[in-house]
Length: 555
Ligand code: GLN
Image 1 (spheres, helix red, strand yellow):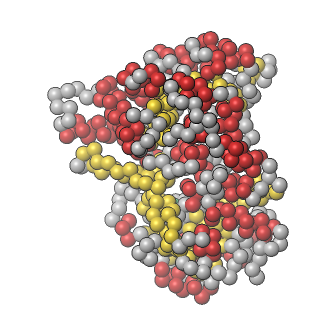
Image 2 (cartoon, protein in one colour):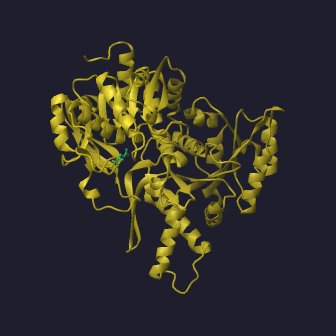
Image 3 (spheres, helix red, strand yellow):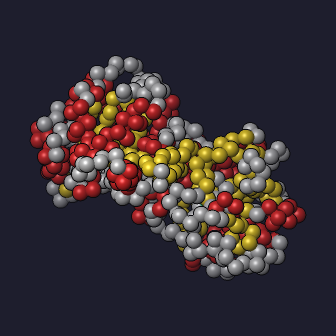
C-alpha cells in the first residue's frame, strides 16, 4: 500500500489548493517517488461533465475511461473530471486515471444501488459506516490500481466546515486511524490575509479553520499559508502555536508571478524534507529540478508579446478554457513569447468592417470548444475573416466545426449551412451527429470521450507538425464534419489531414492555400505540459510570430 497525503482547505475556497497539491506531488517526484493524485469533489453530480464551465471551470478530459457498474441496472462511464486534474497532469507530466476523481454523487449512487441489490440486507444504511466505507474503499482502490506507487495525494474540494464534505473528512479520520501514523499525512491549506490598514498578516482565520478540523478529530501535520506576501516569522510562530504544529511545518505560499515556480518555493522552505521525514521515506537527492527551473525561467523572461483573439459567448476570463490558456502560454514560453488572450464577445461581432478591423489587430485567432447556439453566428463570421485575411487560426472541436460551416457558407455558396446542433432544419447539415449518438438521450458521460487514435495523412501541414502518422488525442463531442461537404471543399483548398482509424470521422482539416489555418476535432490542450508544449500549439504560436515578422502570408 502506498502512503497517503490528504490536503484540506480552510478559510476560503479558490486559494490554489490544486496548485499546492500538484506542487507537493512534483517535489516528491523530484525525489524519485511515484505519485498519483486523487481529487474529491463533494457535490452530488456524478461527474463535472454536466456542470456549467463558467461556474465550475472546464471539465478536464482524461485519456482513459472509468467504467463501473455498481448494479446491473446502472453502468457508469466517465472521462470528464475536475479541472484540477489539468493542473496535476501539467505538473507531474503524465495521464491520471478518471477513477481518481471521487464525487459524492458516485459514492451515494453506489451505496444506494447496493442497498437495492440487498448487499446490506437487514441493516440500516447510514453515512457512517456505509458511505465512509465506500469512500475508503475508493481511496484504497486507487492505491492498489497502479503498481509501484509510493504516495497518493488526496485533495478534498471545498472548505473545512462545508456540510457536504463532512462524510469525506470523517472517512479520512477513520482511514488515518486504521493506518500506521507514518503512512498518512494531513496538509491544511489556509488563507492568511494581509490587512492593508495596519500592514499586518492576520492569522486568526487560520487558527479558526484548524480548530474546526480538530473538532472533527483531524490534526494537521503541515500548514500551508496562502498570502499576498511571504509569511513573517511572527505569523509563522503564531500559527504553529495555535495549531499544534511545528514552526518549520508552517509553510509560506505567497502570490507568485509564475505558478510553475511554486514547487521551487516549497523546496526552498524544506517542505519535501519534512514530508519525507514524517512519512519515513528515504530523502533521496532531488533530480530534474534544474530542468524545471529552466522552464520557469522561460515563462518569466519573454522577449516578445502575442495577442490572441478568442471569439465566443464567454467574455470574462474564467477557468472555462484553462487548459487552452495553459497550452498557449506554454507554447508561448518556449518561443519566448508572452501570450495575452482576449475573449471577444461573439454576440457583439457584427458583419461590418469594424469587426474585421478589431480582429485583425490581434496576432492570431483561436475558435474555442463549445455547445449551443449563443454567439455562434459571430464565431462563424470570425472564422471566415481569418480565412479571407489568411490570418493564423486554430479551431478546436466546436471551433473546427464552425470553421467548416464558414467555408461551406461563404466559399461553397451553401447558404445557411450549419451544424444540426445549432440549426436542426438547416438545408446543408455539414456538421451532424455521430451515427452512434443518434439514439443517445441521456446527457451524463455519453459523448464520444477520452483518448482515441488519430491517423494523419502524409504531405499535410499536420504531418509536418507531428512528424508522425499516428498519434493519440483526447475527444469530447457528439457531432462531426460531413465527408460529402469536405469532398466538395477540396476545390477551395480544404484538406482532410486526419481521421479516426476507420476513416469515417474527420479528425482534422487545414487549408492548403493559406499560411496556417487548422481545425481539429480533438483537444490537444489536454496533453500539453509546461515543459513539453503540444506540437500543434507550438506550431500555432510559431505561425503567429512569423506573421508578425512579415513572413507569414501565403498569398
Ligand atoms: N458541441 C460540439 C459537439 O458536441 C463540440 C463539442 C466541443 O467543442 N467539445 O460535437
